[in-house]
Image (cartoon, rainbow, N blue to C red; front, side, top):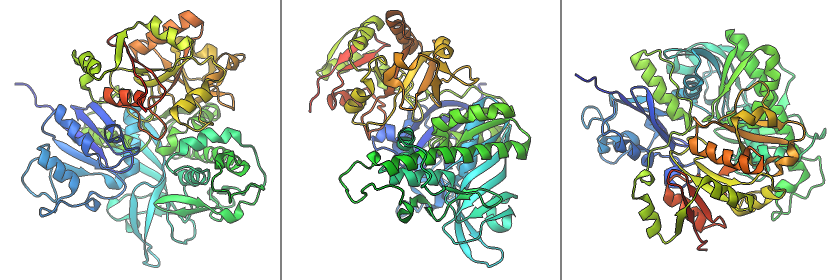
Length: 601
């Protein structure tokens, strides 16, 4: 008799909400809600939950990750169960019986936000044990009672060190809790007296300071962006310079460096605020509200200071993690893990310490859905198998793979024709933007050849041209996808063999920058993706054809979307993007077809 499969769905509820579905410990699909709803950073992953029905109509466990408990979610009228378990119950994914307020198939891990970041990174690292460093904005919201004054307050986990091993052993060694309360910074052994049901003892700092990620968010907002758009600050920082008039972002006078509260004021759980009264270091006119503030010297210089000082603080925590545990393998996650400038910096600094680093490509909160699902699998089954679950091509399968897809496209009134790799290369070398759409979408924020916009990196004005077409800011850099076998000839990978997930902004080898000016940032770096035929058959072969024609083994690669839009998920999304932009060409390599769309605006 065939053994019954075990189905587990992990659900991330907050911003970057999403669902990860496992079957017998293997990832079936993982997707963020924004790809389906078309609302950037969307919460409430109901469309993602519906995708589960394409694979199974029953779950063994439904697991939730967030920063507040499941009982804080909205309620369904009359029955009173929360909207998520109620929705799953109505879909038939969990049993429609028993106690709907405390369902036996539902597991609430929302008080373990950082542990779910750690689980995602650890299980995908391929290592049997490691220490996780989580650098996040505001993780789990912990109600606390001061054991001396008995005053109640809320603290938020911002930085964590967690010892990880199979099957599901995650022990917190250190944590920084931030709070808005005015309280003296303290190092203490934090026990269940303070944190209630979590019930573990670890070294902790409870402070009224902004955490490292919150510092970055505050500067991001000051530079004119949404606090969640920290990647824009990362792009802006090399336009700045060292400015000695900028107050220090971190206070190093105590035993543990913490952010400067006079300059960066926390507003947990939201982003912190820059104290404008201390920004007196340039004559820039901040009163001109119509001006692009990213052009102002004080914004650029502060972005520069923020990048350099925050990455130094994270490096300190990485070294602290190896000291606490004695382990030399570190996995990095949480929102700051997406900082590819900092990640490259660590490689250089950690070499002398013999520390190996794995940076999780789905470091944002969407990755906690995967972490939660994997954690429950290993915890419930006590499985110790190290699985190869480090890929990112994890989106659900869609109807575009059906044989009638071309009929549907033709019916939409767009032009479609046969095309080879050579035809696409010919378009690229003649300064055309070509999009590529194939297979399963990339999970996480990086476009890695399945939902990408492509261009010839050799054009001098390529960055400005594509930024204009995509409606992006002038300072936003682009990435390069390179045949893995040529990566070391063109770039300094600082000891890495490959960089398949575009998590590092690396230096060029001498004489290379002038060959690919479209993808070289103002600081001389390039965020790269190495590509092999096994990883992405069609994308590799397209780059190889480009190399044969031009002598350049690299394609200019950026995400298939317009400014402010999520990456495209479906073929309909892709065609809509072309119809609403000056991009004309869409390559479907699985069908050897080229779609040409005329702008309908």
